[in-house]
Length: 147
Ligand SMILES: Cc1cc2nc3c(=O)[nH]c(=O)nc-3n(C[C@H](O)[C@H](O)[C@H](O)COP(=O)(O)O)c2cc1C
Image 1 (cartoon, rainbow, N blue to C red):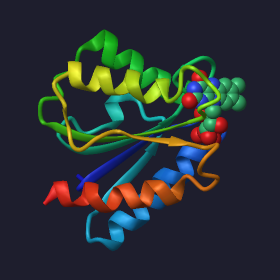
Image 2: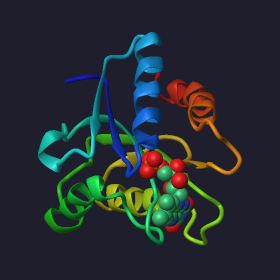
Image 3: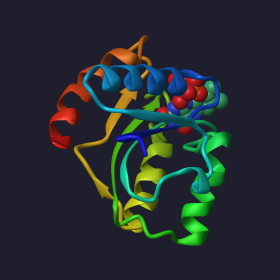
Image 4: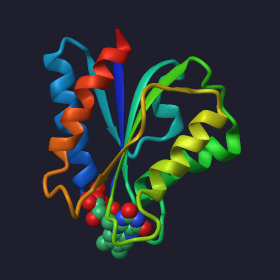
């Protein structure tokens, strides 16, 4: 099992690029990683560290590729008490439902017993044309919580 499993939810690919960039940075810092774009629950280790990165679509909606995992969390009630997770949302302040998707995912992970490490980062794409930049800055302090 990799030290850190990165999970992305994306419609247009932006959150996937962020996940891949952070995986590269984590590897440089000495962690092994597995990056899964829109994984199913059965693809995920039910222990260890997850880093979940999701953009938002519709009106606060979860990207289509993350819906199966979200539904499985809601309907199958897995025990995630051995999981610790970090969360990054990507969205636009134009919408009242800014970063709504990561809030929903985060709530389900917590309901399943997973413990959050650090604060959720919410990236406003109107402010950050390159979301990798604030994500990388956030990762620097998140890594310290893993030690
Ligand atoms: C049709 C549409 C609906 C969107 N709805 C929201 C929203 O409700 N909340 C939000 O924070 N961002 C919203 N966004 C902004 C996207 O989350 C943002 O553009 C993000 O960078 C897309 O990431 P992706 O490339 O991973 O799909 C929306 C964008 C589009 C095109």
